[in-house]
Image (cartoon, rainbow, N blue to C red; front, side, top):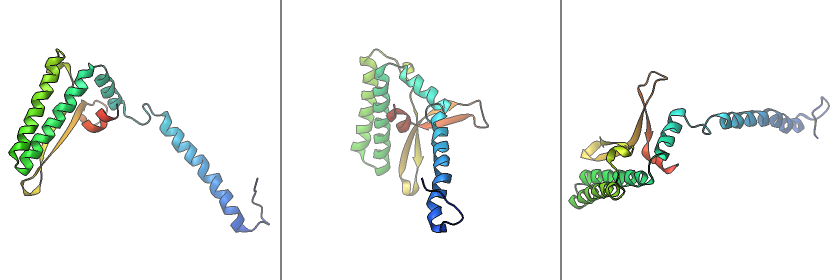
Length: 153
């Protein structure tokens, strides 16, 4: 083990000093993150994941088809391509067919809110996410992006 004494050359001591300062800091930081519930995931997001997991498996397929249809439809509107717009509408119909095939109603599944965002030059973009009610702060709702919640499951 290397130690730093007064009679040692100073350039020999700096690696030891850095290790002594850096290692405890890194261990403390990583340990603190691991102690958070869900590995840093918020309590609201964990509750949303649990709610989605408790739904029938067909609901995840329904959400994926719904969001894909919505995004395709908006893309078709944005680039003014009727074929793409029609393809989006067909995907939206297929999402409803998933529910019918599994004897489910739309209310049986949690559906993300999808928003059309206007961009410059008349273009459009879309965003889908889940809105969760909050009671622990000044915000009334917290939004979670659909793709991050659904794909991380």
